[in-house]
Length: 421
Image (tube, rainbow, N blue to C red; front, side, top):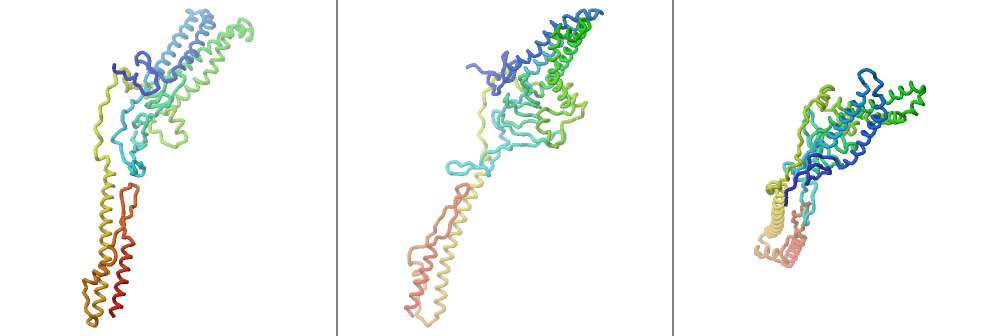
């Protein structure tokens, strides 16, 4: 069986093309609609507006520059869209196993296994790391089995942990993260400039026609495509223009969209803010980090893991040892109580004999003891199992038979004493 490549065994929801060379999100089909919204207006502009403006500028045929700039700038926008949607946004590779160094046994959360309560294996949900001298909590991801780095989040659509996660953009069909945020902002801002460009020259062409026809209504009737382009660009500016302004604010304050929406109501310090100028330099003038994933590499066979060390069960072994020692101590206590009860009966007999002195006939002390201890059945110890949360500990108590035997012995001794007197 041929070995699989990483992109073939990928557990995320991404789509790969050209043998894993390009990676897209699961909603990559939305790119077709985005391309349609960008290319179609430019084609309409070049055919119905820009073509008529070629000779409106007498000096050096400047009107041709309008078409050239439109086409070149449109290609530039499409390249930025491609760089945003087809590259790794900063996916952190998943672990094959949970981090063993974080194992711990929580006795407060136990599982019933075969009638026995065992401590449950737990992971700390959060850890603290230091960022610019401030403690920052990082969360454990159950899906990727790792502690997410600061500013990292798990995208529910792509099913990956992404570094410096900003948001998942359905218009580009990809997550926006550390490795493609720069291209995303350049795409949005360039689309805004393209909208302004098309809107401006469409309005200029309406003015040219108005000077020729005499009224604005005749000009609009002469070139309805210009009116449609102006309306389309005006509506688009509310989206791409507003998005550009919003991300300018985020870059200036060194925030992500995810952080801004989630922690907006919290009065927490932004530990990543380095000042407006340095924040812009960090986004546009730093080298893009290489991808952590080699999607075309062959999947390596999993190496069998060594068995977990015995010390991992220390909490359970300690509890079992304590239980055994407790049972032994309870047995010793029960035996001592039995001896004390026997010693009490013997001392009462001896004291009674001494009180009689030489007036009464001598009695055999040993026979009296035997009559007391030999009457009835031998004292017994009743065990009553008391199950703790571990189901192993027990406690021993003196049964009621001991007290009953002691009372019978005392009554038989008093009766024999009255007969002899």
